[in-house]
Image (cartoon, rainbow, N blue to C red):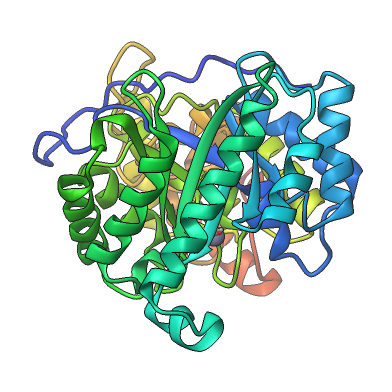
Length: 432
Ligand code: KIV
Ligand code: ZN
């Protein structure tokens, strides 16, 4: 395994945004191995799940939803492997999903036999659409499913006091549910589970489908937190999807509106347009100088494991992670970056134009920042020759040389690498 460097946010210079939004890390829960997995064309094999689980532990997740063991034999076997082979660190909770149905809950507990710590995540859908068209039940009928599920979860747990249990309930399709009704259902579940401030339950509020702007979602969360009966005995969790492209924004605003915990996936795999991307949200915090309490310093390993397990490519412009996000092609950007990098030292707050964070913080290098193509100016050319070969061109020579590089780039297409640049320089100025 790669060694992880401590991942602490650096001070950021010249902040002009108002003080401050998110000030501490939420509790994170990865749902890569469940929600992420269920959305894949080819679901993960046990080997892929093992590899992904190891990554999640290394990144620092303390709560990991590992599957839906009552719905999948592969997930059941994976949970058994984790427990029997003692693969779960003492401070990590494995989380498993189950529908609120007695036979599925029984099977779920079977999979968890011998676990040290586990979160049993039970859900049923509460939205108007699903009540009327899928279940054909009224509000009372749907509430009963939740209450019976909660009772069943509690009874099984009481038979296995050797495990440290945490109960989690999701009113699935919360964003399509009347908020007062969702509160009524959650109050009824809490009456069964009887949480206390020292023994909290997790109430997970999913934007199963993202249907509104993030501020509306945040309003819903704030209203929920103010009106649910036993707020102080609950960890309020958010589980946003990305249907309108705002999964991260909704989670951020929801956190500011009073939530404590965020469920999502690394780089945003998940049903349809994906779950909210924990990498982006954590790095957004980091770029504001807030410690996300996840170690994302080896982004290349994260990408490589995620790609190997999901068989999905990471977009080159993916925030903080894509291979082009610390690259400037345009001459004016390159020039500004070059000037700022020359002033930047490790003891100073990060203050470089066009680069919201130091690329080294995610394991990338300065060399990648400047790449030269036909749109590049003299700054990028000079920077590359100096970095790669220690050739410091005087300004007049930069002015003469950069059109030669541009012409070469136009002829060849694409990026001019340092070696070609040096050859061009030698053939233009050092022969005859
Ligand atoms: O998106 C969703 O609502 C879910 C639930 C099962 C939490 O994945
Ligand atoms: Zn989901």
